[in-house]
Amino acid sequence: MDTKFLQELGLHTENAGTSTGQNSMDSGQYIESYSPVDGKLIGKVSQTTGEEYEQVIATAQEAFKTWRMMPAPARGEVVRQYGLKLREHKDALGRLVSYEMGKSLQEGWGEVQEMIDICDFAVGQSRQLYGLTMHSERPSHRMYEQYHPLGIVGIISAFNFPVAVWSWNSMIALICGDVTVWKASEKSPLCSVACQNLLRDVLKENNVPEGVSCIINGDYKVGEFMTKDHRVPLVSATGSTRMGKIVGAEVAGRLGKTILELGGNNAIIVTPSADTNVVLTGALFGAVGTAGQRCTSTRRLIVHESLFDEVKEKMTKAYGQLRIGNPLDENNHVGPLIDKDAVQNYLNAIEAVQKEGGKLLVEGGVLEGPGYESGCYVKPCIVEAEHDYKTVHTETFAPILYLIKYKDMDEAIAYHNEVPQGLSSAIMTNNLREAERFLSHAGSDCGIANVNIGTSGAEIGGAFGGEKETGGGRESGSDAWKAYMRRQTNTINYSTEVPLAQGIKFDLD
Image (spheres, rainbow, N blue to C red):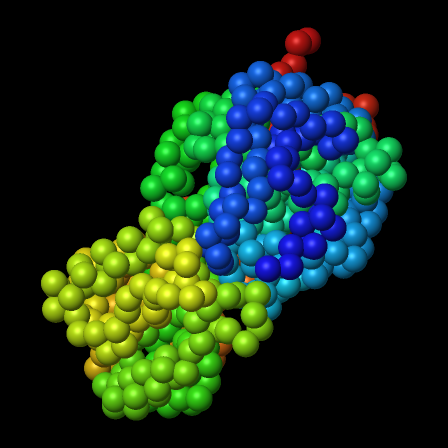
C-alpha cells in the first residue's frame, strides 16, 4: 500500500491529538488507528487530557473575543482560502478517508468535495446573515432583529463521514463568528489531525488568533468534557440514537443548545408506475454505498406487489455483480465495515431477522482469504421481510436491505412511517399524485423526502437532518446557519415621547 498521502497531510507515526491552531499538545497516551482495509496500524493520535481540554477552552474563549468582531465577509475569506487548500490536497485527504474509514476511493474524494462545496456555500452565506425589520405598534419606533455569534461550538463527529460532517458545522460556525472545538470519532482520529494540519497554514497566513479552530481526541469521556461544559453553548453531535439521547439530555440539563444528527432507517417506496432502472440505481448505491454505513443508507425497499418479483430479480442479479475488496482500488464497489464490532452487529441482525421469519434472497457472510485479512469485509445482503419485524425497525449500520411488499399507497406510507427514525426517504413513481402525496403532510415523516432519487447522500444548500429519533437538527444549507447564532430583537425610539406597548398609560403627573 502506497501511503505517501500520509506524509502530504503532515501525519506521522505519532500525532498530537489536541490543537488550538498553531499549537499542539501531546499527552503521550495514544489512540491507535488501524485500517479496516488491511488491518494495519496507520498511526497513533494522542488522547486529550482534562488539563489539555481546559487549555483548549481557555484559548478558544479568548479567540472568540477577537474573531466575533471581524466582519463576517472577512471571516468568509478565511473559509474561502481553506476551500482552496482542500482543492490542492483533495486526492491525499480522500485517500486518507478511504484508508482510515474504509469507504471507496470515489466516495473518499466525494467527501472532500463536500468540504469544498460547503466552504463555497459558507463564503456566500457570510454576506447573508440577515435579520428582519418589523413595524412597531408604537409611533416613531422601529423594530428589527439581528443575529450574534454564540461563542464556542462543540462538534462531535462520527466515523462514517470523518471530515465532511465537521466541515458542515465548522465552516458555517466560523462565518457566523463562532469558534469551534472538534472531537472526532476515536475510530477515525487521523482525519481530524489532517484537517487541522491543512487549516493551520490558512489560519497563520491570515493572522487568525489561536483557538478559533481546535481539535480534541479520545473516547466518549473526552466528548463529555464538552457536553457537561456550560462554556460550550452549542454542541452539534452526529452518531447513534443512543449516543444522541445521552448528549441531548446532558446538554439540555444545563440549558445548552444541541444540533443532533442521529440514526436513519431510510426507505424507498416503489410504486407501479416506477421506472425500475431508476429504482435499481438509486436503491443499489443507497444500500451498499459506504458498505451500508451512511445515516442515509437505504435500509428498506417497500415495493408494490405488482412489481415485487421484477424488482427482487433485478436487485438480486445486481448484487451478484458487486465487487468487494480494497476500497482504494477503483474497480471495487464495496469496501469493509469499520471494525469487527460492526461485523458482529451485522451477523447478529441477519440471525435475528431470520428468526423472525425473514427469507435471505442474497446471503450475507464474512469474507476470508487474501485481501480480506482485516476481517471487516462482509457480503451485502438482501432479506425478504415483513414490515413489522423488530429487526426491520432497528438500524443496523451494515449493508442489509429489507425487501417489503405492499398493496396500496395508504399501506406503503404507513409502513414507511412506522419506524422510530425519520431521516431520509424516497418514492419511485411517474405518477404526479403519488409523488405529491408522498411530499405532503400525509406523506413521508422524514426530514428529507425525494422523488425518483435514492435516500443516500446530501446536497450542499439544502438543510440536512431528520425528525423523531434522528434528533431534529439541521446542518449545511438553507437557514441552518441560524442554529449557530443567538437571535436578538431590537426596538429603537426616535421620538421625544415614550409611548408604552398595548396602549398602557403610566403618567406621573
